[in-house]
Image (tube, rainbow, N blue to C red; front, side, top):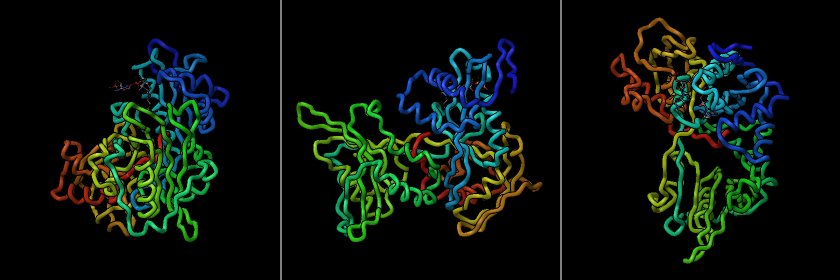
Length: 420
Ligand SMILES: CC(=O)SCCNC(=O)CCNC(=O)[C@H](O)C(C)(C)COP(=O)(O)OP(=O)(O)OC[C@H]1O[C@@H](n2cnc3c(N)ncnc32)[C@H](O)[C@@H]1OP(=O)(O)O
């Protein structure tokens, strides 16, 4: 147990005990000002890793919460690394701005470090909160809302091979999860789902449908041998206006292993009878849908922040990914919250086919940046050059910025497949 330095309260920080979960989660809901459906609460209860859950307590009452999931996340080059997925962070309105969150983050990052996880990630309720703890914005997402009348996918040459079939989402789940897992290493930011997490993509309690019908699962299979080449999950809200039918399609996920399967899935989703609008809450910035439709402007894409990334162990993290181009650079890293990372790091790699080395060094720095900026650039979705343009990375040896920026960038945009 850790006492918090607060002149007025007797606040202590300690891990959660399993039987304290209900009041602990009540405190989290109060912090968010929301009440979840019984089904969602039960799902998060089942997924909570109690030994990674922290509370700040005033006597017996929880006033602050934070948890972590033991994820495995894909990084550039295809390695899938142990990663702490920070979650369930909340402080009661009565106890805000007294350092409760900072105490939770301190304890949590020390714990992540001791566990040997080089990375921590989170999605932020407000992006301004987590930079002070070293989290940088590492992935973005596109939100799309397409008027069906204007957006079409043209047929392609190999479409005859694809057979589309509707299936019960739960019955088809194991089949779809196999394909999902095959594709995880190909896109940085993808999360390999641990046992239990497969319920998330088909989670569909009636209380949360908001006027939509049940979730559907559409399978794209090879007509000749039945091999699963892609799937989509979506729901439809029926709606009738004076002018006629105006249903809304909400696409939760499109996963495809081939261009033909992807085209067939999108052609179906963008041309459902009685619907007028197709909403897609999250797509990668480089999603092929942008190139499949004749008029991408009509998709009305909006770019939003998604995953924040923190390098907890700079050397391990930088060694574990691949680099798009040869790089040999000394980084001066500043990390006030996790000072073991502060110092000069010599990063070198011969390019994407080779591994990388990253060791502490006494050599002169060539590029200076805070750990938050390394987190932002780590998955390859934000360039060091862009960060330097904002004054957040300083070039100390001419040419070092262009060299490192080319190496850190990646040709597949990182993307977080689901919230947590
Ligand atoms: C991963 C996730 O779960 S994200 C969910 C986060 N939770 C929520 O948004 C729920 C509603 N909000 C809350 O519960 C709380 O206000 C929290 C958790 C955001 C902050 O908790 P607090 O205990 O008040 O934070 P704490 O007092 O430790 O503040 C630390 C610093 O962060 C700053 N800060 C806190 N909240 C915010 C915010 N929402 N926006 C910007 N800065 C903030 C504080 O001003 C303080 O800055 P300083 O170090 O310069 O003085």
